[in-house]
Image (tube, rainbow, N blue to C red):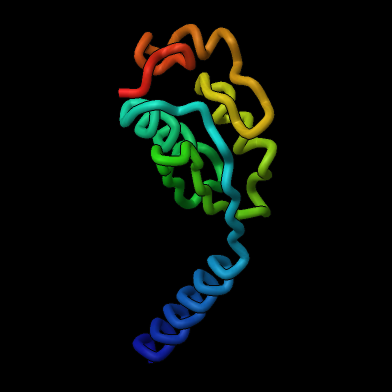
Length: 113
């Protein structure tokens, strides 16, 4: 009897997780990232953001792809995280104080390396 109830609860729980994952959305945001350090910094900060499931920054085109739960976060909040990390997010310019705290090699004026 206990095994049957446990099996039913496990099946329900797994079914709920699949249903929740189906509601995830994806957004692509152009950044001002330059190098692997920028990539790591942006992906780490997005990973710590509520509702963000996954992020991947492609340095060849400077676009970060973010998978997120729309019930927990918004595209504006995701962009705010990038801006407050010190990088541009689409048409919105980086927070100047955060940008100034970046290593000199990661600032917009630095040459690609």
